[in-house]
Length: 160
Image (cartoon, rainbow, N blue to C red; front, top):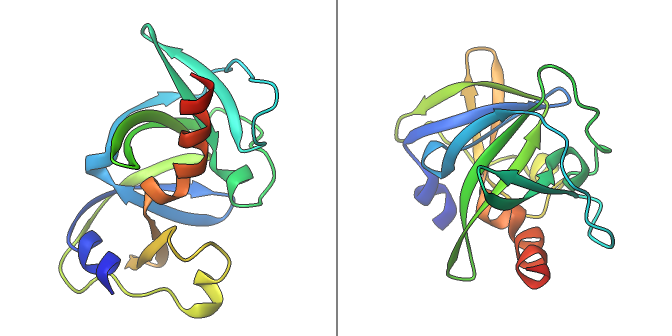
């Protein structure tokens, strides 16, 4: 599987959505910020939380719970916006993703990333999930963040 090799060994920022653990390549992460209210944009997808002015740069914010059909995030003191750099249709773009809680950085060695079972990977579009890894007593679903946020990133580019 091409994506599995692409995502193999390396470091992953892990986070929680509801009771599930996910990870994205740490090289995609620019920074973490505590949740702040964002400016809602009328007419956008429900997964687009809005826009955030981040030190003079306006970036779209995507609610991953809403994106994955878990309902909108109700912010708590653990809610975090992970600012990521993604590649959408050959163009680099900065945006934020809202998660329930950031967990830790997971280091994977070659061979530790496994394909997700069909019953699990069928819950999300196949291009969203690269695979899964076991860490201590938990399972972490590794995401291709570029693919996950591509529709919202395209929508944000059109609105700009």
